[in-house]
Image 1 (cartoon, one colour):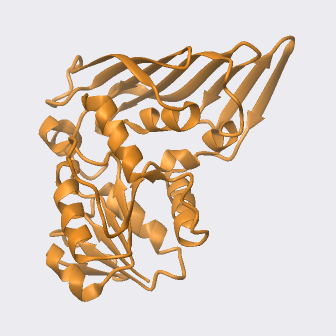
Image 2 (tube, one colour):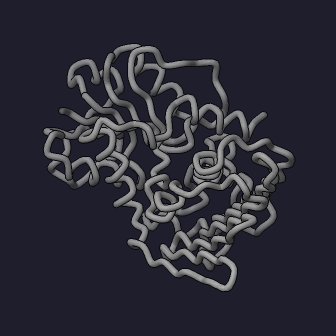
Length: 296
């Protein structure tokens, strides 16, 4: 099977390294204007060349505001292929449904050991959920100034609501549809960007309050999930891969496999390519629902 990576920034490089691990991937093409040193990959300069190479899997990971045009073109000229789009799906909602290919959104955090563990727990009696993703944007990409990355520009799909939408996705995946009550999203720090660097989401699923906090300016990175139920409370640290389950007169501590962005991406592709199991991978329609949740 031939693979095509559209875009070769930090995400594109990660996807290429992961796909190189699969024996069934015989060749990897990169669509980029940039030169790269890796001789194991081949380069194409324009999207129309996809008809010549006929890839079996395509990964769209260029700038977010270019996802839509790339997907539309690929879905028009290829059929019966697997297409992954780096999160978020688009920078805004479009009235478009791909007809010729299987399309997924690369919310690889669904394959985090903690979230896989929690997926098997019932949350029917939950009354409060708190999720947080806080980090420092200037530390994200080592080879590019943060204020020149797409994350810095609202028009390119940057901003915490879209860039850190993993939390929205996995909360929906674990707990079900969330009814939005309030979204506060704005720039409040001194980062040299024009996108929002802070977002606060308040919502509900069933009778539970859901609180999601996202930020670009926290130099002490945090990724945590708190779940309060009538019978137990769960405190999960996604960076340390630890869980504390508190019950009456009892605390259980669990240390899981350390989180790796590479490993979670590898597991996502393993489900799609080797197991042909798409049940836990974010579908195109789920990606659209996340955009609608944010933009409605």
